[in-house]
Image (cartoon, rainbow, N blue to C red):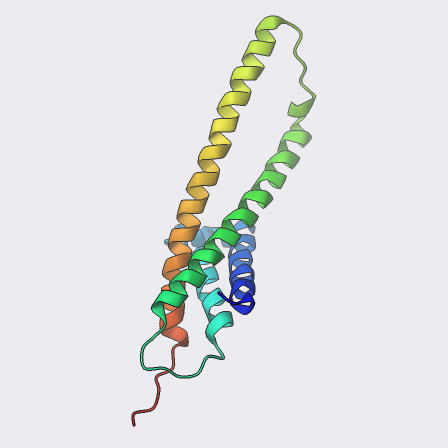
Length: 152
């Protein structure tokens, strides 16, 4: 995959991830992850818009670019989500809690373990959803961008 296609995947995936974090606009993801699919479509459009006409649509290439856009989008979405979560917990003063007894330390360690497993589950789920739907967007984008070669 060329640098142009990787760059297009990064732009498309990051655009979908940022749009997915905007309050109100994020509701579009309730319609089959429309913003994630849109990120895949954008990535394929940016990567393949200058390709010469061909007999068959590059669905495989679109799927690869879309999947890579999903990875980029997932990583950025997770980072934005963690920044937002960190700001919320900091504002609530949760980070300032201290353990004063052995029981408190045990509770904190259990809470930390559960929170850690939750973060791992969110990362895995986000990767699966973003890569899957962005790949679908990549295939749709390949169909949209494709120009048929003139008949000879």
